Length: 187
Image (cartoon, rainbow, N blue to C red; front, side, top):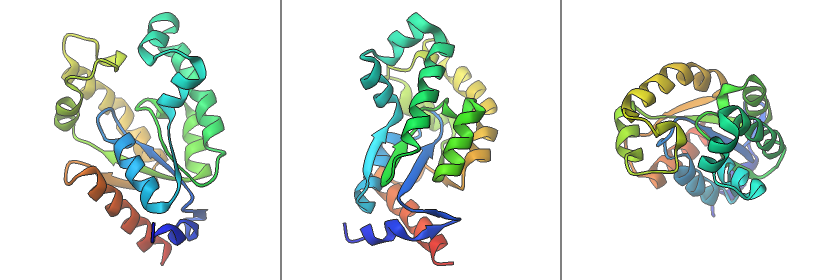
């Protein structure tokens, strides 16, 4: 945790004590986020896990019973709450950027990192994961391409930085993000 003091340097008017990771399914937001939080000495919260904790239900169950709209409403409330916390790294769900209010909260309340991940990498990383309701389809790759076409501009709109995730381990990506943030803070 020798890098923890960097958590209070200024980055684009925000401090490095509120980092929000956005990106598609399979980008590694949770894994990279845990490493990044560790490097910065911050708490880590996965927004999807927080939704499950608050509701006492799995995301697939919420989708089944309430539909995507019901899930997005729950997600909106969680994003509104979590983005107010200090000293935290938050991994958002892949669709968190679909609502304008979420994009505003994320962009205005902290530093947003878009973990850009090519569709082929997403397919490889999500192929065995049964906890992703939007991929319960005959052609998950086509669905991922469709989602990327819609969401990529939104990820880019909300992000302060874009980081490619297909090179290196999660820990290496976290170190790369830390270096990027520290370099930017020194300008």
